[in-house]
Image (cartoon, rainbow, N blue to C red; front, side, top):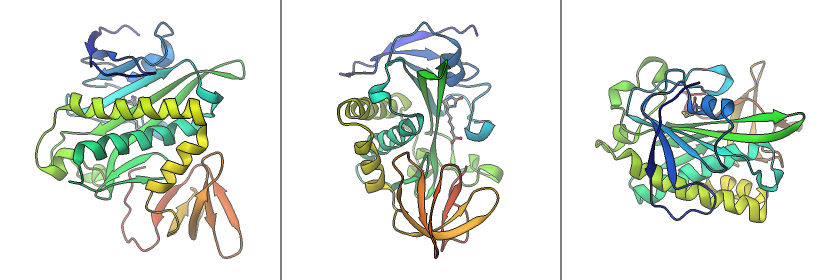
Length: 268
Ligand code: BTN
């Protein structure tokens, strides 16, 4: 894939991520680019103003109008603690949450939704897609792709997007995407360092401390059946541990809603 990049120096003091980031006005997908190009060092960040083929989870398309969302991927070639893929999803969600918390200073209510969404006022603000490249059976590269809705107006979120939201839609003002990116990258860098230093338990514990549906009654739809129970915990591989009347079940791919909700709050 051919792409024209310019570089932006964010002048951040980072341990793992590169403060000099790549920027493309248009690209197919920042994730796909990294999966197909081996030449960049560990911690390279690629930011795009627009993606013509943005990827979501489960093979879905990730749509964002030009220059309104924050669309970026981080390439990792040195794998911290050789943590399995799932942990990077939780790590990125925690980092987005913390970066935005700092930016918002209490002006809005953020939450996490298992497994990979960041919610703003109960609606999907951010999606995360972690992908990897295998060499043999070994994971050789990880790409953490993040899409944060920043400046889409409220009326963008209609029809199939009606469960989404943006910072602009909630705050009623547009924001500088680079300022948002800086906060998120600082938090991402910190959590990558923590992963290397302390391992994945620290990530899972932080995620659980933030996620408001832990300990609550939820409905889990695994595509075949809907299970009602209590969201007890994360398994040590990031699975959702559901306590039902008769047993504990662990889910690795499913959709979760709070049991008392009448409408669906996620976008996945
Ligand atoms: C989801 O389905 O919730 C995950 C969406 C992830 C979208 C981001 S945007 C930047 C990066 N590049 C992609 O093609 N996808 C991810």
